[in-house]
Image (cartoon, rainbow, N blue to C red; front, side, top):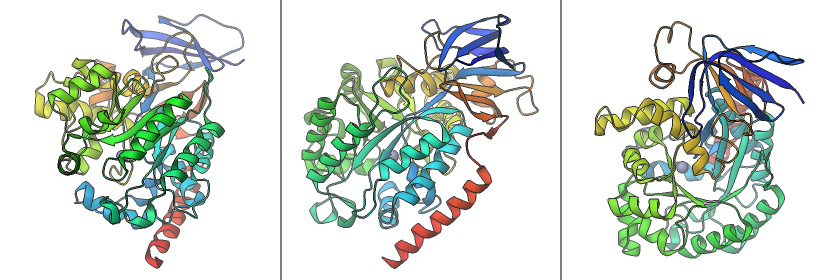
Length: 453
Ligand SMILES: [Zn+2]
């Protein structure tokens, strides 16, 4: 196995004692971390040494909510609400196929890697009848970029003619959804300790899927031993929709369908009353907090402090790039802390709260914290080495404050399972200039199909 030693850097471990070292080291042997400590690293034969002076090493960031395909549809409906934005974009997304999904996913994954992410989920819920193997295409993209991946097989079965929001031509029949989801799990889900690929089940939202699909999806996920995800409590419109249609809040509604539990994490959780926060905490349900997307769509601000105080696993997510054009995970740290303080005062979230949500909190939300989310011997070697000695950050005394409150720092090194994905602020797995051309062409192809529809 190959030995890599990162030496001379500040270290934030996120271990149970939240140990930090002003100057320390991390030793990686193959896929796993073998040592983390203070002071200079031991001299090891045949090891590659990385000079970490001027840098901070953290666990790799974990992205808990995304729609990778949306990389191709950034910049639409820029001043609109969620429901207006969705109805603009559904007809464009109806033209997705394997090639456009592969290219869009590669673009989004590349941006995640460039911004410190080592593990991401994806929530893909648009499966046009003639689209091909879209989940397979994005899995291929994750392998190419080199990120650890938790794609979820999403779905919509509640078209406009039945009172839902999406047009009928982008929804599927429930039997086809359940069959496709079971097949995706059987084919791709890898539960092994060193897994780079786990699959989840993710009907889209209360206003685009039936209660029947929610219930049967939960049953399928539990039969297969995989995780459950959906959008919930994102906007006032959704709250009104659930009250009017089901006579319940969004959390009460999904609770009635078996959708709270330690195997569930929910995207957004913006509009939660105290009873909903308690219900999530009591059931161990996690939340993917997506501050930039929520701000972009004017949805509100997640009660991250209250959720954390109640014991809810809270991770951060960029959400799809159509509602967060930056799609930069490191910037979500800054936004999560600033937005919480804007409404809750300067102690609402600390810079370390932000970093914890972005790493260990995200790993907990994804049910993967036994393998990732902290720098500890035995864990997977997923780490980010941030350069903090250049002009934008030099002399900020606390490296965590520099990372969270400063501008996004250059990424000296990003390792996923011990393999370099970013080095000296450039991707080593993907040609970024070629990727820009491919994204341009794929976007053109997708838009021309929407025009012809
Ligand atoms: Zn979303």
